[in-house]
Length: 317
Image (cartoon, rainbow, N blue to C red; front, top):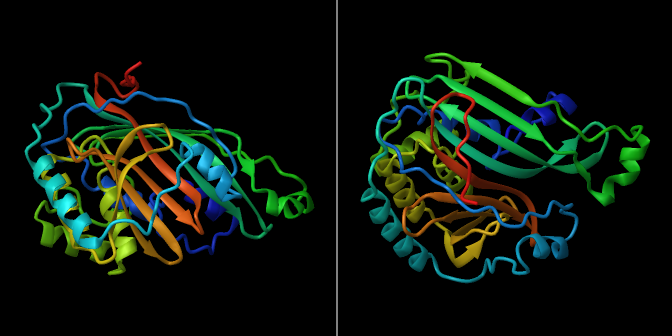
């Protein structure tokens, strides 16, 4: 997540489009963080991870376990029925107990996204590791560390011409007290509806869009944090079921090897994918494909209650 600063640094005038990792998406999902109800602790087993350039679809096939999503499969009606079923499952999930003194809701995730040095003409991919600690009053601690970038081969000449700069980014370590959620939240905290029709209207207004593929991204991104309540998950899944063009991919595997039920939508020349756990309605992953090649992804790693703003909740070993 939070690769926008990298883009802004390279081109302050850049209009960063919607993606699961854009700041606009993150601002919207941050607005749900002090929900009184939340999901049970989420943990997962991390399997193999391969970080590679996204220059070719063949590479994508490797990191996706050898099988690319079949975007032509499934029907919209079948996807809607499955999503509504998942919404019912999510609504029936138990809530997380309220936080005790000094405790935080913790979420750990990873994402890979293309970065563009627009004024220099080269592109690269970079993996980010993100830890977020949140309290219902808006107190937070956010850390993001980055692995060295991987140059996209087709832009190597431009990179060399620019002086072969290091493909790195400075780590992020931010904290804020009560009410300290970063500026720019588009839906006020405590004001995110769990009623599907109202939530859909809020997202369309906050994102200034009614394009189904962009609304799909915004809705799914609301479920990235551990604090997403069962009611919110149910509303998000219900709303995704109403979007035109959503198709079911069946059982798919994310980039960390975890399986879930995938759904896709096509827009702006890209296939957007969201993967959910059928038994909880939790968001497992988001992915973006262009011309069959994986260009960005976000994966949930671990989540639960932490006893401090520095303690992590480890995945199952």
